[in-house]
Length: 129
View 1 (cartoon, helix red, strand yellow):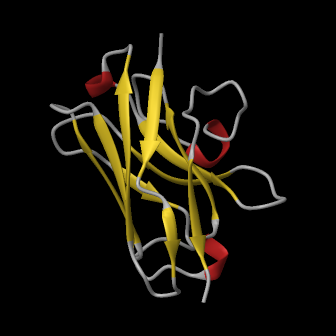
View 2 (cartoon, rainbow, N blue to C red; view 1 turned 30 degrees about the vertical axis):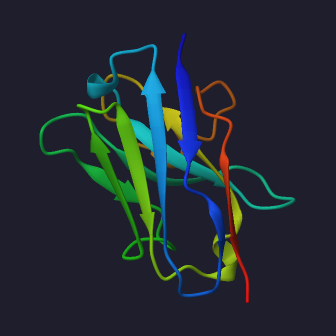
């Protein structure tokens, strides 16, 4: 059974930072593309970032978070991370990690917002002054 458990959310002021973690189990973590998606209050799911498998993984970001957020993974720990810097009020959302296929997804912004993609229970990030 695929299990994804997110942690690290919290409340911060604009400009602050957080590091989200997602611990994975129930599948061969190292060969799967992983991603972070988010759902702002009252809005739909939005893909944020994705990371491929491999020793030098490929990464991709939503334009509005590029340069502020960094995705990474530790295959020895079966964990994927999302470093959030320079947070803005519009980053407020429930953040989920999601498991992709055992290959790179060309359009992660479409693939990972599908309701059938395995994801965790989420961790809440609130950015306010």
